[in-house]
Image (tube, rainbow, N blue to C red; front, side, top):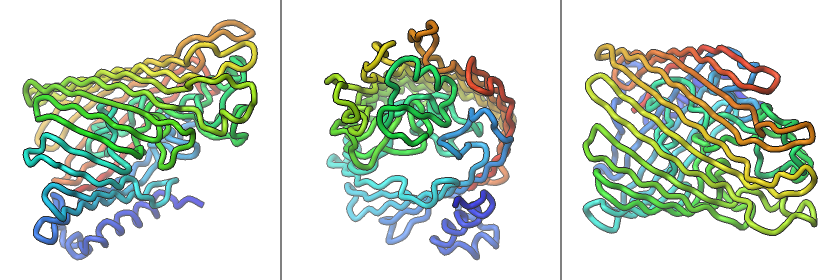
Length: 408
């Protein structure tokens, strides 16, 4: 049984403050406004806690899995970094979240063999390489409450269950919050987004570069849409990203990834499944620019999943998607800002018995919001979101939410 939002918020905040011995400090209103260090700077602690309450979402537009919406969620995290040597660090993040309990969100070792920081090697449950938003998906880095569609919206694709033909896939069109297929797992579950922003993959990552030009490559056991701790298909993913920052106020990046998507249970569910690779492939472009009071961000991601072609009408081509968003934030004063994001997610067309249709329902989203900094490390946000799609039981939804968050 999941804890309710208020109870989880109290537990999460108490966990963060209690672990630091900061209960008395918080009561005295002398909150930390930067990471806390111990042992001469060799141990660093950072934390965050947020609580969001918003509209009920009958169309499941904002759900991040079956039963958990980003508009009604509390979460808290505690990051611990131990540096026994200046070129060696051990990092872990423990997170409590509505619907997810308390879990180790990240745990990895980082080695910097060259003293000037040009080269880093990380191994374990590592930070994402692909794209821009997944690298800044914490509430304090997001000017709005909702997430971009490509990093949150549940499609009707699953890695552990697949349709036998195009008609079965089209039957699930616009129903990514609860999907069932005959090949693989018989349990009804939520589909996957293009890229999971709230869960990290397990593997090895190498980063090379400097503040102007930086590149990274990662080899992991899961994929962008289905990160894993343990391999479930004897396949791996290779992902890479390069970022160019000619000046500090401007950056442009490109990402690519390819990895085995379909699980071993699906591949062995039927004896007539053709051999070959059933991968997820993605390519992304992103940019960021700031000047004066303005901050502008945008991202474009092309993605595809290859499924086994089984029965007529066949799913012969990869299931392709294209998503993009443009986001703007304007500071109205030292403590107040306004922000907006426009977002679209489109799907390729397949041929069913009754004709051609996009394999999932195309979705659009527009979100407007404001944020007010109560004090350093304490922010309150409010937003209004409009969602539209051309399929599913609910095709339009207007949602609102408020969020309070604290971090150090």
